[in-house]
Image 1: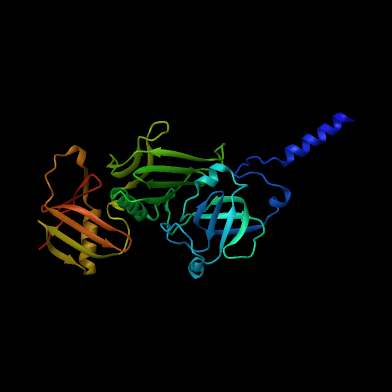
Image 2: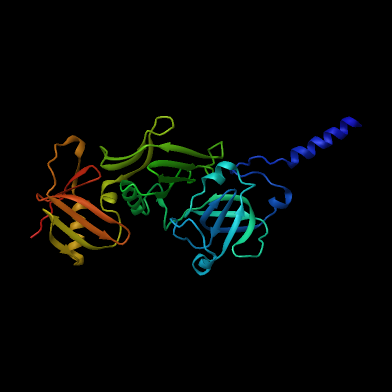
Length: 326
């Protein structure tokens, strides 16, 4: 009789203990498992063992949430992360889009609830998305690189897709001069360990490849091989990323010789650069540039070194563009 009683106690103990499920979240009690509430939104703040999710995306550089932002933020809920697997909970980044399955919500503003499961969802407005056919939001990479080169804190999320169509989310974080990468492949059906991996890297590099792509990668990483590829993008797509450019300046010897706002003239310059012939500067002996061409876009400002022979230089790539300015 005592033996059966001990077995019963052990069964209760095993049932009560949380384990890690296949999607990277801990298994829950029956009441939590039955939670049907789902919120999609943006991470507004991450605190010890909790995350604030808001309906509308806020400026990710603002670290403190003010309840007075109600109209701007929309619905807002603080979720306890007690039942979320540690690597997932620790990987959440301000500004990224996620889906939270949760229990009942305590009425307040922001509301309060407990997260049962969390997964990242694609944000086609802000993520750089790299499906198998076409890259979306290349300008996101441009913004990130410009901030890094100014030694400013920066965050970028890149979504890659496996051959089977499963998304893999990569958060690139540059803070205090150091690179951190958080790789979430928990939605990849062929990944056995459903945890978010984190790597530290030292240097951002870019160069022209033999197939005329520009490769962006982080080097000196604490991982096998030491190099983590961010993206390899066609030269024409990244040398002038898709954006709305309202003005182009041509500067020679510190003097603005042209200030172009006419649409057809701007388009001609951009087209010549995109269709120019690229060469890696690593194989060339370069002379100092005579000036600069600046493209002022809605989302980013693009700088080229300019040579009066009509060529430009950017991303360690020399472009024979055949530009002429009267």
